[in-house]
Image (cartoon, rainbow, N blue to C red):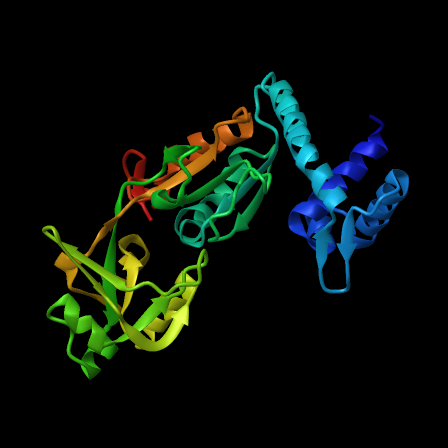
Length: 319
């Protein structure tokens, strides 16, 4: 296969996978005009239309779908071949594509990105923050990070954190204006900040558990979000109560800006896992990330900071 043939096929795969010329251009690191010209050249060479496009949308034709189905496994094999060669290097090198759910992106990945890049200057990270439980294989991601309950059974899962509590919190200001709940059922009468789930658009009920008892409470309130940062800020501003991972709320509880409610009813949820396909060989760059995360996260999934400018021996303390 000639080099320009391979470039045309990889360009087609990117457009067909992302259904967007601009997103494919960003993915490939070229201009949208180059992508468009490459696709036209490929269709002319093959004598068949592979993609239907308008000013607003892109779709794959039947011929394009047939080509894509055969092309993606072939490109994955090429990636594997390159990774096999890279195992002969002492230092991992290459690009690592990672899909991370929003909560672990905020809690653990974001604070550690700079440190990882400093330790592994030959690795290029391509991180996509996405709560959708999409197939990492078809998206050509090397790995994903998500809560354990959202990881597919056919994936190889590496535990990054222990289970975590989902605590109900509110600001002191909000609690001055209303009585706090004495029982989970009382939550229905309070103003709640609710989350819309990205995978199905639902707004789940608040969950409470204690000694085998379980309550799911329908809540109401003026705000629904799909972002943890917005929810935290709204709670700090006194909009209402909200359920958050204990690690996310931790620093605000410590300084008194947030207060826990119904603490003995906090449910325990699965921890976060890094997962990757069991089909493809684990690339060295992925092994480097797994080893790094294990070395730099505590059991709660919080980044550890190495403190060197202290008296006495060096210490390792959580953020």
